[in-house]
Length: 162
Image (tube, rainbow, N blue to C red):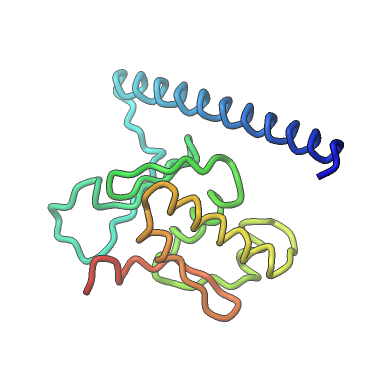
């Protein structure tokens, strides 16, 4: 690799590390603010919880898919994945709005990207989302993102079934 390219990639890598550190710091501050608000009697209503499977009324928060828009994160079976304010978070959030249903590429372009983009862009974003979930020990959630034709969706109905 030519030296100029190496220096470019090194600078890019350093910038990404700095962004990651700032995001982690912001998430920590958001946690403190939310805890303080809870102490003052304000419930943390910003966390969107989606029960999955056919659970009875005794299910706990650990049995739910939890999307936290304040931290751009997802919780699933005791694991946490901070995606950050990125397309992958928007994509997962969109999928979670209609669990067990497909969403067309055209709808994803309008609702997630807010512009026309290539099919390859959508497939790449789904691949990166699945990878991030797998890295956070959420393999079953990653594999529940399914594609069919020019559609994708989050299908939690078969998780845990033999």
